Image 1 (cartoon, rainbow, N blue to C red):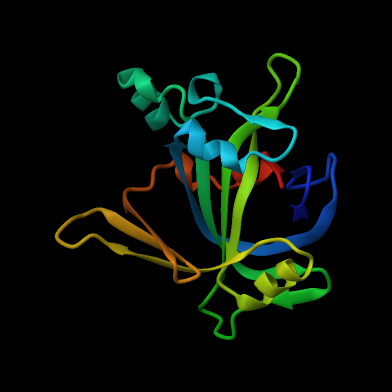
Image 2: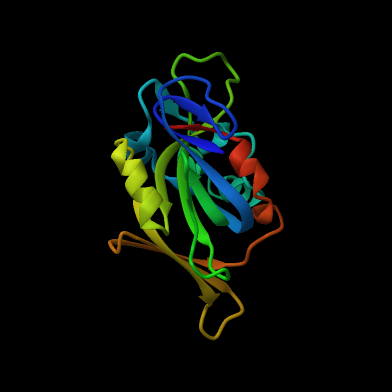
Length: 204
């Protein structure tokens, strides 16, 4: 279960702010996350009121690959960490409604994208949280429910395959048929551990 709305929210509970809608995600089938860095000037636009960006060199739980990048190229230390996660479920629950694909072999897809922030004026060592910059689903029905309570949501088409003439995997994310994101590479063991992504606090 996670909450969509304003203020600080967690996958399990709401700490502060207005919760406009709660979604339940039933029976995780698969999922993956990609961590990347965004220039501070661009990421700043995604910080909710009362929060400020956290530079990569101040985040303690970066992926080892991101930490190596900063060590090898210090010019990226001031950039802002971001995570994009894709999850595949049997069904998405919104309020009293349960949405699922008609064909049993198909699954509902959910995309979550967040950037690293911390409360303005927070105590030293305050935990890094992730501002929810984007929520997208493969099903137009929960998307419509979110928009009905004034929460921006996108429609997503997720595809996975192989890079031609390569052993690399290719993942493509098509958002509202306007934005295409392509990632080539291999999933690592810690990328496959999905539970911590939902344990992190999210800001709406």
